[in-house]
Length: 102
Image 1 (spheres, helix red, strand yellow):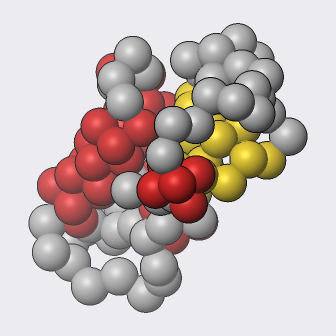
Image 2 (cartoon, rainbow, N blue to C red; image 1 turned 180 degrees about the vertical axis):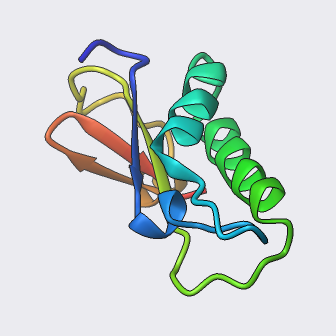
């Protein structure tokens, strides 16, 4: 991984979300959305996935959770880079990956 790369973690409820015709959202639609928004922020990628699933399902009842987490790799952690206690409290470092709670 290089800084700026994103990792998308999702539950099977995303790819198995169904529309009114009982078709699945599927991995291809998910990949297409992620690729189309790959240069954007984690929040923008997350929102695009949620919007894509919502548009596809058109309000059809779902039988599973729809969970999406988007991470951005920022490179090796530097212990002195956080400027405020608030910044430190919103970030968890997982082996060089910063997870920010928005």
